[in-house]
Image 1 (tube, one colour):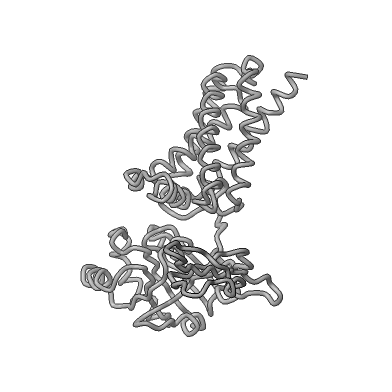
Image 2 (tube, one colour):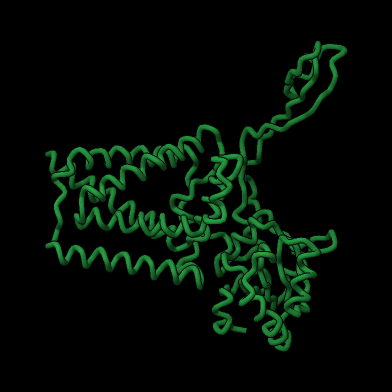
Length: 366
């Protein structure tokens, strides 16, 4: 019975680590954004790690995936189980901290493929911790499924494949796009709120100074505010988020006006996405003006989208000889649309027809 439980735990933990690792390895840039959020001053207060978030993300997801495979094949059980235990203890603490203090709304455990609430993430880690502890206390029952040399070879192959996958997606695009802006998506429809969808419930809290002390009153308790009290502030408390469409906070702003309704009706629209021009790869930026001229010759309207300032836009246009206009959109939204900086998106009346990394401009179908 003990052996059965141990082997079940081995298979369950190994497969879950592989799935979780591969989903994040498919999009390590997205996972790095989540790590940067954890490293921020409002969460762990370790901003010095933020510049290294991508390198840390790649290491974690490769290590996580290979650990799962090592467990399944029985490679170095002591090292493998100890590594799994230390990793799950750390992430259990992290998800509990995030859930209890409501710091990060999505841990990124399964990337954009499966969104978990903070408490769901913590529960998942507690379950994994339970099964890993079974493996820890029954380590002697974990045996290699093959001989030493074949096992070593399989682990080496798994490590090589994971490293190659990481290299590929960083220099091209995720193999599978789980985001709201995947190819085939119509942006206008993605922003629609279905009829009868639950609406957000917000309670207004009014703060008044009563006898020198700040006291809070809800919008239903205004009649209880004593005479002579002085208004201090008002804050909104979200009781229920309500329905949030898959695509929100999407804008195409220029000179204080939002042109998305107009631009998303264009039959041929080519968009250069650069969430931060100051961080954009020069290799990609140098190719944009040539592509701009080619696209215009084929009847495309060409624009850029960025969250950078007007001065940064002017600087880049001068540096790379760009003649198209840039429209403003929130940086988080642009990072969701595409990971490469810059990247190219082809739209037809608001429907995303193609997305390519700047390394793959030759693959564009214009």
